[in-house]
Image: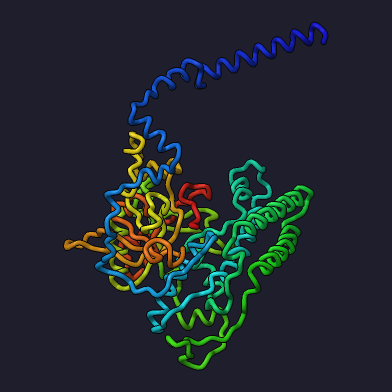
Length: 469
């Protein structure tokens, strides 16, 4: 190495060293700070004993509030009858199971059936096909934008999901109808979606790149749409191979408790079956409510790309105080009508007993520190959000009509939680409930008037865009 290069290397090293020192002094953990941190932890004998226990056990187990493990109060003053618990198994389809459980309860009551379940995989097939088209068309629509554009980046990060919202249920049923479970049964992959979903996601990203490359090479929109159609043929083939081909016609009739037909079986399409037995306009007859304390209440909001179909509806909701939402929920339950409900289910969940209770775990006492964020702060920092959909079915009211606790029908199987349900305290409801879908007949005029506002459009990456799983 000649002298000039050597001096250059030394100078560069000195600059790097100086830069590193400057960076360290501005915000890094230097030796003095590290020593101070070490000295700040001076455990007592009791704390050392606790440390030994914590090193060998789950903090969730150690934080259990033993005083809260008394006999579970399962009485509810008002409850909607339910027959059978569904099971989404190892899939993120809670949104679909929940939406169909709302419809299932209505059909069982209206038709006086002993039991009834719809085919989730039928609508899920079309959900995945439609979401694939939504992504590919989104790539075409944003083809002139750079890769580091926020929307383009979001599209490629989220080409596909098995999660969703009630809006997806409404749009899918409006377009494709619905079928009984025995007409199209679950497959291994529909019960275990992750591996195939990851594979299809990879293929969609590849297709997205092909569309952008074709645009860069001069392809016009007509050419890109033709390419997309060929890509969707591949997607359809992949879906058909793991989920089966959705039926276009089938024969069905209701059965009695002994399994005998109550009437002569009739021929249906998925659309005619829905029209005969339910005939509900899910898109117009229901109102999506939200409790998002990070934004003004009594406002209408819409989230871009928060939809399942390209030609479908974005998630559109009215943001309301909890007291308003609870009042509608209580009226609905009193009238024996279940509701689509979503929350941050993992917080303070005792999955064995089936309870959602702020008193289930004493994390503050275990660590001797306070976890002080409120609901608004948790949403702002992405610490909490709507993560799971279930069917709200019961409420326990005190003598003054105030809710004490609530019950939801879950889709984790009959052996999970409390007989397939979860029981939540009203305090937990306040902190971790986010979304509720209510029939318009239980919605006051002052809330319906909010829907007349021009909604505020929020970006796809908004904290409230969290597909329920």
